[in-house]
Image (cartoon, rainbow, N blue to C red; front, side):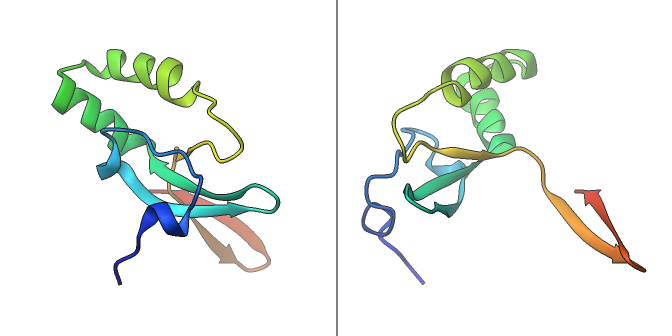
Amino acid sequence: MKIDIDEYAEGAILLDGLEDSIIGIVEEFGNGRRILYSKSKILSILQIRDGMTEQESEEFYDYNILGLYAGKQNAVFLDLNIFPIKKDDKWDFILE
């Protein structure tokens, strides 16, 4: 199903040139919908498109992307994919 992201997440901050790293839309009560980006996809874009090293892309991400505050509907970033597994009565979390 195709959606109009500007309409569905009206007012959410979109990061120019990083559209390929969008992986979802999240909601927070009182703040509206926000765009969810994959940190690993952003780093990959910076390295391939902009020719940055791994370290340069991490530094650029930390300072210019993660450190950006543009309002209540600021972008959010997925750092790790984890999977919950219930074993007996205990939860374990496995890193992808």
